[in-house]
Amino acid sequence: MKVFQVSELIAAINGQLSAFGEVWVRGELSGVKVAASGHRYFTLKDGEGQLACAMWASRADRLRFKLTDGLAVLVRGTLEVYPQRGSLQLIVQEVVPEGLGELQLAFQQLKAKLEAEGLFALERKRPMPELPQRIGLVTSPHGAAVRDVLKVLSRWPHLSVLLYPVRVQGKGAEGEIARAIRYLGKLGRLDVILVVRGGGSLEDLWAFNEEVVARAIAASPIPVISGVGHEVDFTIADFAADIRAATPTQAAELVVAQLERQARRVEEAFRHLHLAWQRSFVRWQNRLALLAGSRGLALFPARLRQARAAVERARLLPQLLRGLVMRRQRELQHAGARLFSWPVRFGAARRRQLVAGQEAMLRERLKALVFRRRLELSGKLRALEALSPKAVLKRGYSITTRDGDPRPLRRATEVAAGERLVTVLAEGLVRSLVVGRQTSRQEPLFSPGEDEA
Amino acid sequence: MSKESFEQSLSELETIVSKLEDETVPLEEALKLFERGIKLARKLKAQLSAVERRVEQLLAEAEEGEEPPTAPFAVEGEGD
Image (cartoon, rainbow over all chains, first blue to last red; front, side):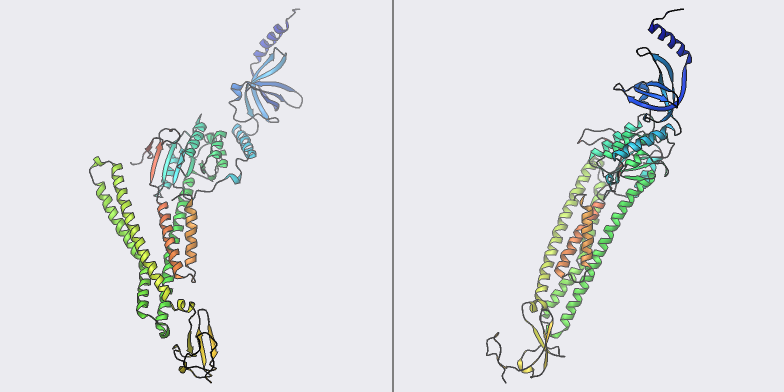
C-alpha cells in the first residue's frame, strides 16, 4: 500500500474533489465573518451537518444583499481541502437567497438598516420650500421622465430648471445619481432638487435602491423630492427623500402647486387690502358728512371742505399710483422693444444692461413721487385730526345743549332754572338740571360759582 | 429681499389686512397699515416673479464657488 506525505494526500484528494466540479448546496448561513481582506467566511448548515465556506472578496463584493446569520440560501461553489488545516471547505462563487428574490432581500436589508439609523425619520423631513422657483433636476436627458417634468413645470412662467444629466440605470448609475444630488445641493443657488425616473422593472429602478443614493439624498442641504417609477413603486430613495411623489409628473406638479398657492395668497391679500382701505375711507367720509351736517359742530366749514378733499385724494391714491405704475410700465416696455430692435452688434448683455438702467431710473423717479404724495397726504391728515371736534373735546372743552335742542348754548340767559341740559364731553355725555344761573362771569373761572338767586 | 422672508412678509400682509378690516382703527394708523401693506404686496409680487424661465443642462461640474458651464436644454424631438 502506498504511503503518502500529508500534503501529497491532500493534493490527491483535491484532485478527486475537482472531479466533483461545481455543486449547488442548500442550507442556512451561520457564523458569517468578514475578514479585513474583504473575504467572507461562514458555515452552511442544516439539521444534521455543516460545511465551512469561503467567499473571496472579488466575488462577495458583487452581492447586492448582506450575508447574515440564519439566512436560507442556495450556494454555488467548488469543494477543496484547505491544506494548512486539512479541513474541507466550499469555495463559494455565488449565493442566492431562498424565498425572496435577491433584489427584494437587498431592498429589505438596506431599508431596515437605514431605518434603524433614523435616515427615514419624519423629523428629518423638510417641508416644500416657501418658493420653489429654482429647480435642480437629476434624471436622464432622454426619455419620458424629463419630458413629463418639464411639461408640467412650464405651466409656471417664473421658474428655472438646471438639469444634471445622469444615467438612471445600469452599472454605475447609482454613483452618478448620488454625485449629481451632492453637486446640486452644494451649488447654493437652488431651492429644491427633483430626483426622477420613469417606470420600469425592479431591476431597472435598482439604482434608486442603492445606499449611496439614499445617503446623498439624506445629506442634501436643500429639500429633495423623489418621483421614481409608477405609483406602486417604492424605492429606498423615496424613503430617504423629504417629499415622495408617486411619479415624475407628480413631483413637478407639487412644485407648481406650491407656487400657484403662494401667488393666490398674495393676490387675495392684495385684493382685501384694497377693499379694506376703500371701506375705511367710506367710514371717514360718512363721519365727516355727519359733522358737517350738525350745525353746532361745523366750526370751520372751509377747512372741513379742504379736509374732505384730502380724504378723497387719499382714497384715490391707490388708483393714481396704479395708473402711474402702468404708464411707467408701458413706457418701459416701449423702451425695451426699441432696445431689442437695435442692431445685433450691441449684444444681449449690453441691451439688458440698458434696459436695467432705464428700469432703475424709472423706479427711482416713481419712488420719489410716491414719497412726495405720501408726505403731502400725512400733512393733510394731521390737519384733519386737529380740527376734529373730538380733538377739541379732548383738550377739556365741552358742548352743552338744552335737551332736545341741538344748538349749543352760548349764554346763561338761554336757560331757566329747572331745565334739563345735555353736556357732550370727550367721552360720553352728562345730563343735568339747571339749579341756577349767573349772567356775568365775575367769579374766577374754575371756582365753584354762586347762584344769582 | 431675502427669500426666507417670503412667508413672514406674507403673514404680515395677511395680518395687516385683518387689522384694516377692524372698524376701530384710527385713520392715521389705517394709512400706515395700508402703506406698509402695499409695500409688502409689491415685494411679494416681485419675489414671485423674480426668477426668469430657463431650462438648462449642466455640461460639467465647476470648482466650488464657480458657475458651472451650462447649455439651454430642450427635450429631443420638440421644437427650439
